[in-house]
Length: 254
Ligand SMILES: [Zn+2]
Ligand SMILES: [Zn+2]
Image (tube, rainbow, N blue to C red; front, side, top):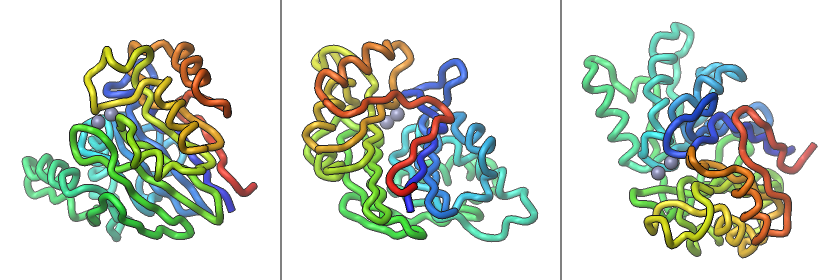
């Protein structure tokens, strides 16, 4: 049994031409988990599965480019006469408060009609179907988690937005695939500290963590994609790929 990862949105911070913000579909043995729901990501999701086909949602943090499409998903589900359950939403309290508050402006809509919030943070672990998920705090200006998903020895780690640090190296340790924030290129000191990684620093983290494969994502619109790959490769000897919307990666299993 392996993990299938499909990129639904690879753009950093804002959408680009034909490129949605952060969203990733993780599938294991017919169980589907949506990792982040940035602007546009759930339009790509629905080319593969309906929103009602999700078993759980994990949101890394409350920034709009990672969560706002859950408002769209609310309407998908709220007006679907055949949808009669609630989808577990694993996220920090701030994510739930933000989204619930947005819908509250549109009374009598209640976000909790279709999503069941379960708070997660550093050190928490949950099981979804055959998937074991673990969370670690991520360096970012608001509460953010990195997520590790394991199935029968196969492992996938998603950094969320991250400026790196020891918690990311630890949760990514030995992962088969690390999907990582690589917003910028060049010298990290030219950017504000504590928000995102450069592609080169993403490569260094992959090396420190001893991962097998690296997939760079969340590139800023102006970031040169070939330069990002080159800078990551300069600091990591394994395969380095750039996330592209609707591209799929298989991790472990066959
Ligand atoms: Zn972001
Ligand atoms: Zn962010």
